Picture 1: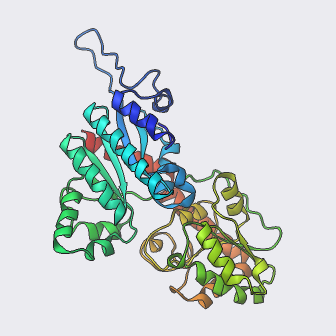
Picture 2 (picture 1 turned 90 degrees about the horizontal axis):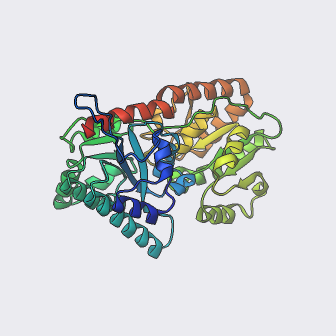
Length: 403
């Protein structure tokens, strides 16, 4: 198993039928999975061949941006299933049009070569709506042409709105593509209940996003309170609701700090919005955070803010809960499956910055209550989203599809 580095190397390996040494080490075998030493004596039990899974989606190096890439990154980093060698084929990068086209073409070449050489046993394809779906639909149909079983991994991103906004012919095409998957993975009961209207081939599989849960959480409670938020942000994720809530919070906790992580576009918009505010110094723009920087921010945080306007369960929320950080969120589809008001966090109405400020103040006024909510959220993540548990369930799906 490897990460998303070197799509050219992945193309070469798939086309030639080779699996590089780093992938072999991940399988736990001493030599390439393709070099199966069949027993010389007839009648002896033959060893199970390591099957090769191509995981297709955006570049896993985009994991710091959250979303699908963050899910892929956890799966790739935590994979321990010896019977399947997992590799990643990137179809998209966060780059200019020319670079994105080059990545997509190389991915197509790698996959076509792998199908032709019969060196891909199973395809695990991550997709969302709109452009992602149209791009991936060709890959699905190509895999079916070569007889390669396909697992679809649907990440919400308003797929329902996307489908319902199409005309009759495009809807029919979407249904045809969906029913070309041997299995479709969804995140919640809500999505399964909606998808069964379109997908009739088998029962959709509920598989929550995986999270690496730290063994021990050490909370930092010295210094001013820190209210944290990060991810691919904007109006849809409530970034500007947070800014509108800041003055009310500062009336009660004048030393509070708001750490906001996001891309350069969000940074520029936020800077412009707050440049004339007396409290601008209480906002810290931390950019994209990952690795130890992200861990340090989660340790320092007194609360994590996700006042989203749209559907979905951001990986950032799951990560915060895994670190025992109490979450303030809105009651949109996806978030409600994790953040339960008064149990694993606090829930406020969409777009209500005063309610958001009130929830923040309540958490800062009662640190013991905040700690209780944070630990309850951490326990929920450990029971439902812990990476090892999710990988075990994914292995079952692979077994069912690969036969």
